Length: 112
Image 1 (cartoon, rainbow, N blue to C red):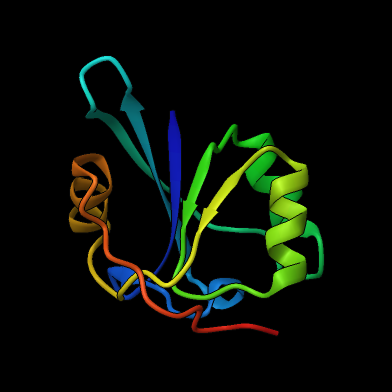
Image 2 (cartoon, rainbow, N blue to C red):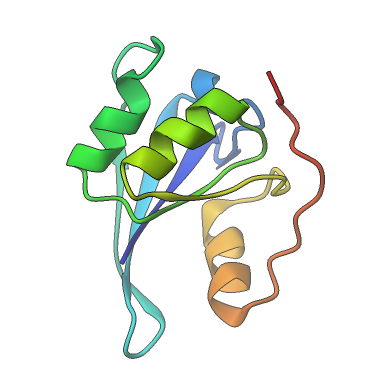
């Protein structure tokens, strides 16, 4: 499984479309452990570009602070699960919480 986290200044970027990089974590689902981490610079932000690009990266899950409804639908169309309302923490902390089933989410910080 591959999880993408939009990142700015080392933490989850609260506005999905304006992140500096995506932290991509590969998870071994048999052992529930991280087996690889990479950072990728996203293409220029335009409507519909990120869902296609992350689909090409074979991302299964996105953990985000906020994301508009249309973007969420476009990711769903790519078969990518979207989790919104995560706190601006370091990606490793968010992944540990997600894998442990303890990731707390709040309101969607960007609902346009």
